[in-house]
Image 1 (cartoon, rainbow, N blue to C red):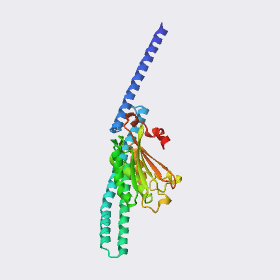
Image 2: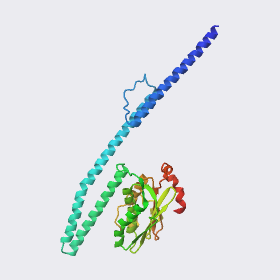
Image 3: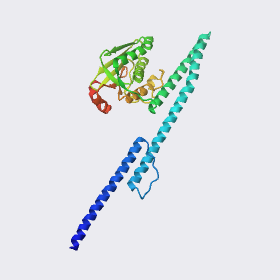
Image 4: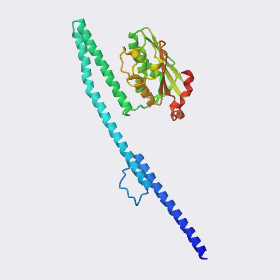
Amino acid sequence: MIYIIIGVLAVILAVCILIYGRRKNKELLIRLEDMLEKARNGSFGGGRIDETMLSSIENSMARFLEDSCLAGENLREQKERIQTLISDISHQTATPISNILIYSQLLEELCQGQEEREYAAVVGRQAEKLKFLLDSLVKVSRLENGIIQTNPVLGSVGSLVEEVRAMGESKAAKKEISIETKGEDLPVTAYFDYRWTVEALYNLVDNAIKYTDSGGKIQIEVIPYTIFCRINVIDDGRGICEEDQAKIFQRFYRSKDVLEQEGVGLGLYLTREILKGEGGYLKVSSKEGQGSTFSVFLLMPDNTARQENSMGKQREVKNDV
């Protein structure tokens, strides 16, 4: 009889221990979940850790979240300092460079001799180059640090192409280069930030004008696919050697074959970063002496496609590249 009683008590004790353990585990999970929720909201403040109340795993989680929140706060402060620095540089350099440009133009008009006018023109061109460099650096820095973010919305690809064509016509006319468009009248829409995508696409057209000989031709072509809309900027210029094609999207990279042309090597890098922020991408196809084709890919209005990794969907257009 006594063995039966001992057995029953042992079973009851085991059940009690099991219930107690489950309750403690549940309480621990609730506290850990509360910590994670506070960390997500940015309100986790750590606090005094009492080893008698918290398990070692809870203690470790608390310290990890406290360190993570501190690192996030430091990152935000660093980004704010960078934003302030960029704004200061942009503001402090804008006025002096503008003054140099104005006075160089006045000097060029007032100079009597041809040599003096040429010197003044050189000063003006270098000031314009410096202004372009600083503007590009500011844009790149803001994009990289998330200070400026693209906001892609559904828009007309035809309007985008027409805007870029109009922007490039004046510069192209000086070299007697024609800019033609194809497919811009199609009722095609895609997701893009209009302002930044105009700049990205114009960078490609501007490069095409720069590296195409007088009398050449540039074509902007729109090709809609199922998931992406493709915009080709095609020129019949000098082309890009295979070795350089892997490097041209790097910051400040300039091929030794084009060093005589004005530029700072930021246009293609900036274009790629803009498109990346919109969920699109950029490709190049070129042969030396046979021109180049830069292809911009923008997401089409398909809600399921927008939620997927765009890079994994490039197989759709590989046969057309």
